Image (cartoon, rainbow, N blue to C red):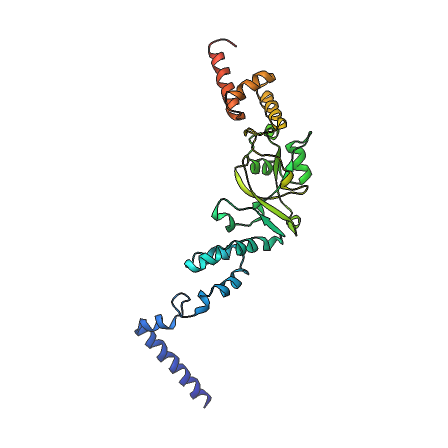
Amino acid sequence: MEEEDNLLHESLITSSTTRTLKNPAIITEAAISPMNSNFSALFCKDILSLIFEKLPITDLARASCVCRIWSLIASDREIQTASFKAPWKLKEIVGNPTSGSFWKDNSLSKFAISHRILRGDSVASLAVKYSVQVTDLKRLNNMMSDHGIYLRERLLIPLSNPDMLVNRTCYIEVDLYAKREVVVLYLEGGPQGKMSICSNSKGASDLVKRRIIESVRRSMQVDDEIAQYYLSITNGDPRAALSEFSEDLRWERCTGRV
């Protein structure tokens, strides 16, 4: 009796499979697609919001590609912020990104510590202090040489310990020197006390101007007056000043003046 039941069951499966293969329409009807079904929950904003709030940032980005409604809900600032903060247990993120793709990546490399440069600081000493590689420090800050530290009022420090983010507030900023948008952690003070990172602006402090002059003077191996002259004809751009000085020096050598 048991063998007969098994044979009957196999016969039904074979018959059903044969009908499906012979009629492709049956396959289409049998396959339930979320987007062509009448499952209203898939388009209910309240339900989708509750689901999307639990998604990691990468899955949230994928969900935004499904359809217009999903994209609208996945682009909600509160949902994006909550998903971005969750892995690192951040307390809050302040600021608005300039790029819509900013929220698609919340890896640790997205974060940096803001260090206000003090007298005696060097790239090597800061690398030791924060336990990071010198090359990583330079790469993050878009620095070609160690002298670049004298042009700035702060450096971004790669964040290697995620525990430092727990229950902390971070700030979305565009660093003009690093030329990137980062999530900045201030260990002391906060952005209210931060100094301007754009040294070429009219409101740049005397300290920044002095550091620029010192850096250019050291690189050129000239006195302050010559350094100030080349900065003045290049609108305060240190790299352009060095380039102009090199061109003049090359011309003098070619004409036998040096």
